[in-house]
Length: 288
Image (tube, rainbow, N blue to C red; front, side):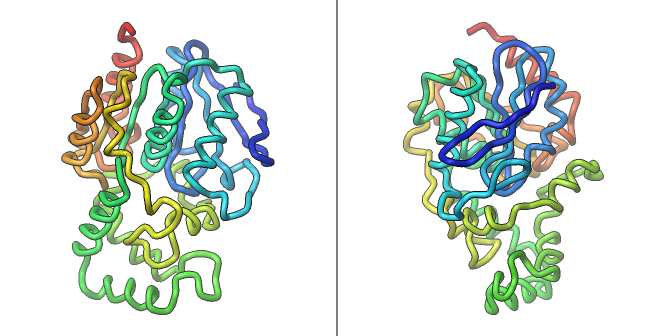
């Protein structure tokens, strides 16, 4: 394993490289999480040079002005990482928010991407908000009352993170769409280290259940037909993005196929490891 830092737009970004072969840039979810929970993807190191990194403001990367926690700034960070590591054309893997970043990157720098994997992600913020409203509606009334209490008060009023009671109530909404197996230690650790300054800027301050931050205007759907790299779309049968949302992404991208993980929620690479490895190995072995 090789690790280090590169400079991008005045900040340092931490990276790790595992394996050899065609480079694969791994974009984790969040926003505000570090790369650590993507650990199961190290199983692909026999097929690709895996490049993990911590996005601006997260993990071992530098903090930045909250106004720069945007999709565009993250796209440019990714391009600087690719250039400064001399990676050339790359495979792009994006999970959850990382899938939004991957779509944004390939639409700006299509010449730099050889293959695209979009895992458990959305093509627009409208779909995120629809999923969030579905989750909110599914919890008991007394749990919704907790949401309403803190949203009226202001989630960040006098604090720099969500109140514990609000977070506990959120767990009720997220549990059915998060993970179907006991979460491994590295996943629990990742959740505990959320960079709230990044999350607050990108997700918003009004409610967990509506995106009002710098992600609010994202909509890649009108341009997905411009993506011509071979694309694999992955979704769990009980994921936060629905199978229908994932199918719509795959249908809009000319050279894409959809894989549904029937026993998974939001982390198929943890929940159905063997199937995930098999599908990824097959996809990476396809002739260009």
